[in-house]
Amino acid sequence: MTTPAKGPASYFPSIEKTYGRPIAEWKELIRSSPLSRHMELVTWLKTEHGLGHGHANALVAHTLAEKNGT
Image: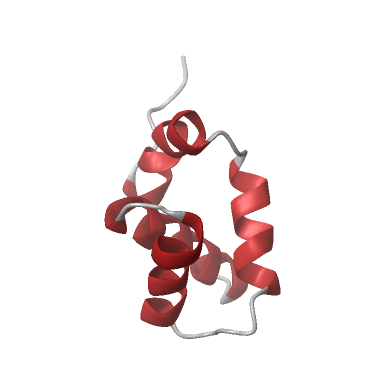
């Protein structure tokens, strides 16, 4: 039995379905961006890639947490 995802990862199935890109691709975009601050990245995903605030926030939070080892 699979445990349902919690936190930012709970948004991932909806993000993939809504925007048609795998999560790994979104995370690579975030990691390769010259921006580094959370809200800068969220705003960038919203304006440049058309993501909604919640989806952008979830992707950035999860990606930055991995980067910081948390």
